Image (cartoon, rainbow, N blue to C red; front, side, top):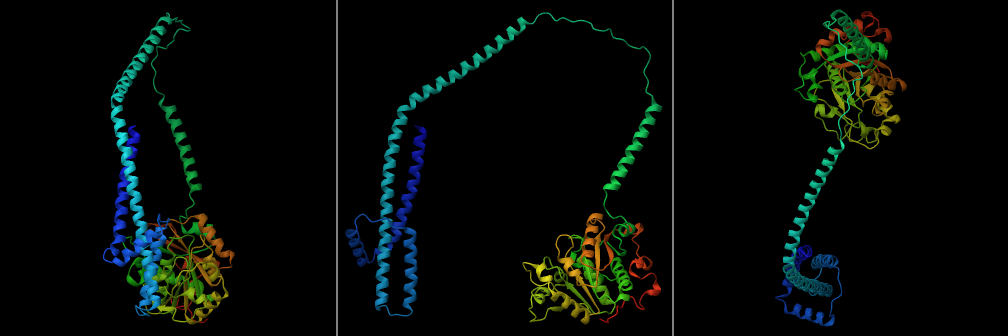
Length: 493
């Protein structure tokens, strides 16, 4: 009874809200007719003609009124108020407004009737609850007594079981099976044998752990490891840059801090690149890495700046159409670039000045849906050839090799490729896969650049010099085979 009373009370409260809403809607709809006797007269005629109004969709009627009001305002700009079309539209609008007000009045009356019925039901249920209150109190009292008796019965059952178990257990029978024996001589630890066994076991465990770590560790610890694993010479080693600066600052370290260790390392890399590639007149160099985050964009930007500062005209080209970054480094717009050139849109200037003498930038351009298809067109190779004629050197920042095929596609159109490995992240497996990916498209992998190297690791074979340029693989064995000026690349196409 109480649950039914509660449910009816909730319904009555909801109905009160419904009555208030219906009343408000009705009064708002009728406000336009209070001061217009003509409209009130037409409303009465409508009620007399259509007793018991048919159901009308309120939402559709409001939308129709709104549309007709809009149309009437538009017509008022073309016709005079006395025009037949204007009169017909106003008549139609009055009819709709009258229908809407009548509908609101119906809803209001229906809500009031529903509330009256619910109020009667709540009153009757209240009387029934009052009559049953005495019986409910007696039932609660009896229920409490039943729970107490049940608890008492459970306690008595437990005591009876305990008493029966004690009576059934007799005297315990104990029999001596064997007499205890002991030696009265003192026991002392055997130090020498124990120490020998501990040394043997410790040495063996150490060997096992050392071999396990050696075989499970896939990192590249030195330049010799890289050359042995990949069969490619290490061309340069770049130190770790201060972490407090942004990545765009790191990418312009040669320009912003020319006296730093990083700038010296990039100038050494510039010289190494000239010695390794100058004899073969390579002009387009792809800079890529196995994975994202290895620092390839930082290397490409700094290398291009270092070469430009040596007097060569350099173009830095961003072919990473999925995640371009070169335009951010130099603060340039990316609304036009390589993507627009490959799409055939040649209107407007696509090559931009970087703000550094002798260095221009070709940004990636706006993002597209299928960058691999765009890069895989013959127009990319033609563009590379044209740019190599315009500049002494073209440095290409490409997408990483392993996640997508974009880097390999671009590598096939470049003269040589440089693989950037991160000293803290790159391992033997990913480095080998990236190298094989480049070789699979016929790319000339000129050398490896080790990035983000701690200064104390230079003693691990990363102190790259002209004697350590891997010339045996590239046909350049000594300084006598180098160019007259290694910092100035030849400009012949």
